[in-house]
Image: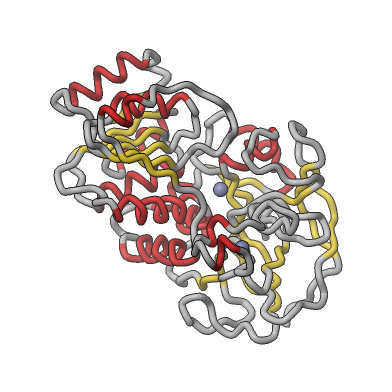
Amino acid sequence: MADIPKTCKAAALYEFGEDLRVIDVPVPQELPDKAILVKVSMAGVCGSDIHIQSGSMGIKPPLPCIMGHETIGRIAKLGKGRVCDAAEQPLKEGDRIIWGHPFCYDCYDCNIANTPAMCSHIGGELRLGYGMSPLDRLMGGFSEYEYVSPMTKVLKIPDELTDEEVIGVACAFRSVVSGFEKLNKIGGITLGDTVLIQGAGPIGLYSLLLAVESGATQIIVVGAPPERLALAREWGATHTIDIFEITDPKKRLEMIREYTGGRGPEVVIEASGFPPAVEEGLEMIKKGGKYLILGQTSLKETTFIPHYILQKNLTVIGSGGAEIRHFYRALQFIKSRQKKFDFSKMVSSKYCLDDINVAFANMKAGKDVKAAIVFD
Ligand SMILES: [Zn+2]
Ligand SMILES: [Zn+2]
């Protein structure tokens, strides 16, 4: 067994709107049964982290907290009784794993509604998951070590996949897989459909990959900056519209109509996190269309015309969070298409923990597709 240090470095948020501080926090020396201590190798910086830091996120953690909810690492210590991962693969110290949110499996939402992704205790009093960890609980990824609770489902990462290829599974990709599961229940993407994706960040890009593999004929990505749109084209977007080049929503609507024979796209996926995008999506979408909303994590208000939902007979689906099967399916997708798509391009820059505020600033400015914090 590797030596476990008494303390480790972690980045914590003390005040909304302020920089994170790198501090020393205690590392648990004894583990309850089935808990895991992970030596973190990579932690992704997410759009949600930017919202959490600024205080505009729907769920507000009590402060101070250790943030970071997209983590990969190796098992430093394995609690008694945890012998397999969620796919029944045996686990041992040194294995590289990824893990889901620690749902309580004790509340109404977990048990009766059968929607653990909406577990009442996420962000609640128990402060489970989502990088909102009290300093002494070490349940955030921006830390050299992370504690994985007994009820958290984990998955072993296939050896042939790199951290860079896989880090997106911890948040954006599993969210997209979960959203597509809901979309597929109402018919999903049909061969020959046009799919419009609003937003070219990780959620938009993973949505693009699933749309490509679903047989869509045209896939239009509306977003920015040019580097992300170039990756979108490389991964199969037939058209891209740069929102900073075409700033007038009316002009964008015209272009979408032109690409779709005046009808609009059958499926629209909102992955921008920008509230006014919803109004634009409802205008652009074809009659009878399906609108999947994946990106709206902030509490900012916007206006839209509800009449379009009725008049166009739209189906609007919201999807947030995911369960461990979505992580698994995302991993399998990457494994099976590793040669077809360069998944490592999702990580555009790597930073050490001491430079975490630079990583946040670059994510905020849209300079990175995904910034990742890496550890030795
Ligand atoms: Zn995230
Ligand atoms: Zn629950």
